[in-house]
Image 1 (spheres, rainbow, N blue to C red):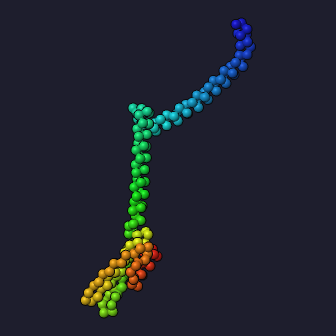
Image 2: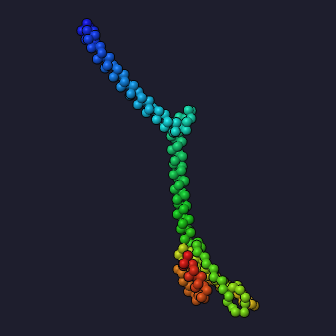
Image 3: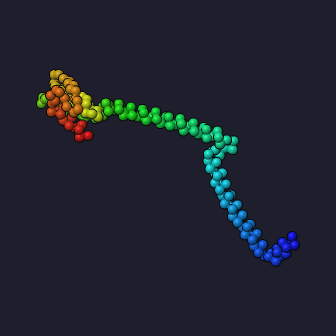
Amino acid sequence: MANITFFLQENISAAFLLLTAVILALCFKLCQTSNRLQKLQQRYEFLTDGSEESRLGELLTTTLQEVRTGKKECEELAAQGSLLAKQLQNCVQRVSVIRFNAFDDTGSNLSYSVALLDAKNNGVVFSSIFGRDENRCYAKPITEGKSEYALSDEELQALKKIKLQ
């Protein structure tokens, strides 16, 4: 013991410097740990929405249930979207109207041809021929942009106008 006391008395300044260095290293480590703890506290508050009463396990269970419910709803919406996209292919998507004067003895462009087609160029062409004494209406089916019936110039014009859209 006397040897240790003698050694410390002889090297007191070196021991003091060593202890000071150890204290400084511990202070530095304490600051690092404090910063990490503060970041963890911020993350925990973010997870618990700042509520002190919330338990992390309950919160994670609730969040997981919400995520699963949201995922299921997204899958259902995607399936409905696909079904709607398929149905939309058969809906009228393009329309054109051509007005014309069918007879010289009538005024204005009272006659018309209307083309209604879906995405696959299937649909119908309606025509109304307005005369002074009578009015006639015609409907001709269209399959893949063509009709098995003879089309008037105005009906062809209505189909051509749709194809330009």
